[in-house]
Image (cartoon, rainbow, N blue to C red; front, side, top):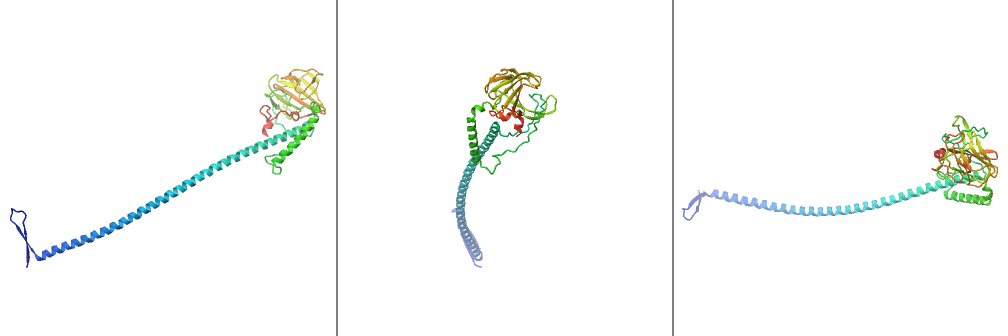
Length: 347
């Protein structure tokens, strides 16, 4: 079989070596080498193609990433703008709600003022001799006098109010205000035309100072001494010892003395058939027959007679019958802090 001899010279100073190979072995080696080179070429080609495809995918992925980031930024900017707009709207709504609340408070205040004006109108009408409206009292025994009144007056029933601005739907507030203004203007001119006559009609609380309060009202109560139900035909105004008692209108002293029930007392004769009486005084500043003007001091608050504390027993008599003195007090609000009336608080 043919052979191929290969001479190999490893170094110059050494003898050469011979390698003999069969021809078939040579072809096998060459074939393996060619197969390996072909396989390597195929692998290199495939690897290069894969690298190209991977590069394309990476570029596409990068573009998509940039596009997504851009969309996210745009969306974030729009969301931020929407949030800012929502916050602005919320602030605007909050301001509007505060304004509405303020207007409601002003409306409630206006309605209260109208009710106060209506009450004053009723008091002025009583002052001028119109039919009074009496309300049942919630009686207390502090700073009261003990009286047994055999008057035939019956307890008055409570009448409904003719107008309530907070619940009225038929009469506008403005219309009612104009009506009140016109009515009070007429009352003012009526009083002005009868000014001299009106000076003899009780119209103020006959107690000087602000540190006073209503301790018992006009109406049915339990007598603090006997615990029996009786009609209290006056009001009791409590206050500090020796508080000045003043005349509620021009008049003349028709009685000035002392008895077991009233203690030291005074009676004044006024105009239009009216008499006022003052009980439980500490001392008197006038004598029988004296002429007094409105706001003149006639005595001082005390605790004489049948009394449970320092106070004034104030009685108003019109045409021979006792009437509620509160209807002839136009200078004080009976539900104020300086003049405390328990049943007014309940209302």
